[in-house]
Length: 353
View 1: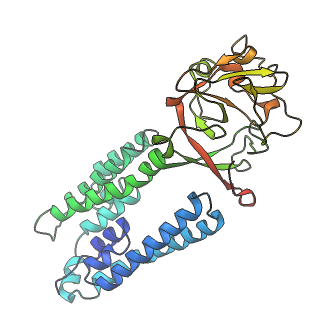
View 2: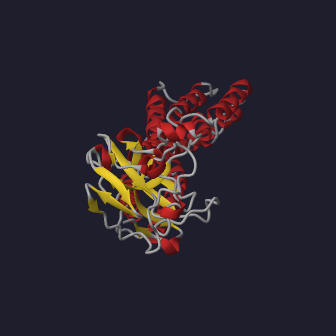
View 3: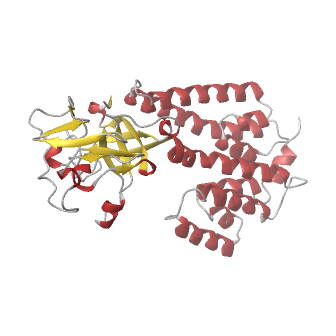
């Protein structure tokens, strides 16, 4: 069996558990690690993200998955080193390891270059990290992979005949680190309730640690239209932007495109029919006098027909909600997704209705 690079094995197992063991020739062990990591990951994410799942159980499973991932790194190193010749190990330890430099670069930009004593590049990459910290995370996996590859290139010794393996490893680093960005951008997103406007369905506090934490489905609305009763997260409308609102807002859909909505007394009527809202507290009425700021007269001060591709949204806590009554409908393209599950605090974990 040919000699194997222990730190290359670690890099591969960091990308996906088990790959380092497979590279090291421990194929059965590697396949088993891949299998159990996939099973645990799927079960953990299902428990956390599905409506029926138990968040507490899901967190426990994911913690176990993280432990497997961590132990797998040590095992990858040992698996690669176990069959190496003594001469190769002596040769490997005589100089800075290029694969260790690549691994260190993934922990923190610049550390890999500090390790190989490329001080100037290390400083540049450290400063770059500070600059990109507040920019889109889309570019970070690409930058991370590029810096990791450069740490390999600038290492004083290479035991490989070419850089192809380093290029492939860098590409895998970029792909694996892009997964959280893809998940948060296109599939799911975690949010918290900053105000009391959706009580008693969602409890909000200025302190994030006290507020209800929710999961937002950003995928379904790519194929299906929002429905009445959905709790949605949306970006501020033009009217709200003029009032200096910047953060996303959480409300419930009440009126659909093309419907006539009006307030009679303290009740909502849709197409001249009383709309029964069972999620409201008995003492909650839908009054227009909560609209003391912003657009005057308020949007629902008279009957309105909801524009096409727009939705009328109201807070469940009608006496303490600044919503469509006051500033108008929400365009379809401003909707981020549907809030479907409360995952924190643990004692209030439940699907949202």
